[in-house]
Length: 236
Image 1 (tube, one colour):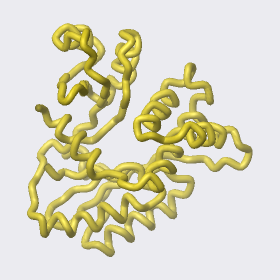
Image 2 (cartoon, helix red, strand yellow):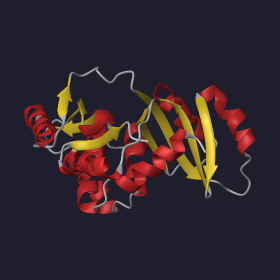
Image 3 (spheres, one colour):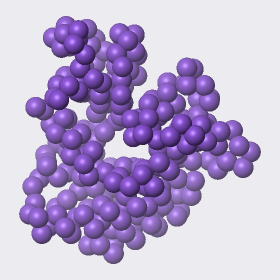
């Protein structure tokens, strides 16, 4: 089993335990996608993917529809994606992805969380070579699916790795191949259940349980912040 599958399994277990935190974050992604490319999922691949990922987390249809409608509301605030880089205790690196309508607030909140919990903010670009950005696609392994044949068909779309576990297929590609891979899978009528861009540590580290407790304090506070979408670490 490859690093991408291990990473996805770990991130699923750790991230966003409470739906009350998860749904607003997913809603922001949907609203931004709808504002950027229109409210029709059939004509807007980014929105289609955002809805797909929301459904994968069991976000109710009413919430999804409301997030799309917010994109056309006259008083809708302009949202933008911003990233921050930081360090937690014990050599743990943090890559923090946010969606915000007030960058000043978001910078202050992220910096405060890091400083109050033994961490620090780093200059953006400091971790450029510490993480690889990957496009990950998940879908069920059907009885008539030939993995070797599928692998050959997806190479031209940018496939780097294909893995299976417990009836689930995980396809990994470079982040620049997200669009071509998504299109290739759709043309093959593959029922994609999740399609995301993730950052995977190039050199994962291991820490003790006591050290993990220190790091968890920062991760929990960051993920509680309404503007923080995802937090990546270099933990194994």
